[in-house]
Length: 208
Image (tube, rainbow, N blue to C red; front, side, top):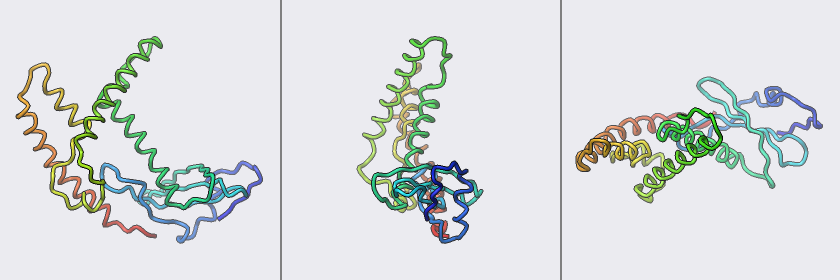
């Protein structure tokens, strides 16, 4: 669908007025999340006349909430490509969340540039180290939704889990065998929750 506004500013809600039909929306996953594939309803509108600019719309089926993405591509792309790129933003948000929760990225009173810069640098280096260790412990098997919905193996080591294991060595050291035993116990129980979430998400209808 094309909307040529001749450089006129138009609210996004008004621009998608032509998307009232059910056929305009497509159920697609924006990638794997903590609780399974992140399915939303997606639609897009071509804006302008050059074929490079699009308004991508994401609709939450449960709440009806809309999110908008202004897109540009050097050539014609499929809707699935735009959805995949839009879903990458979740990785950025997840990175900031992990940095704040695991390495104290936000635990600094900004009073001077030098101290702030040192704190941010150390926090990001610590997160990079934890992420690298977590990536090296994972098997070279793609994170496929159907496999996650069936698997009974403990979940892979995550950044929070590795941080927990390292913290267990200080200040009163705990034997590595005990730490690993508790880690396996926790991850064995977490896989049950993951399996339930993935099964529910996969069972949801994917088309509207």
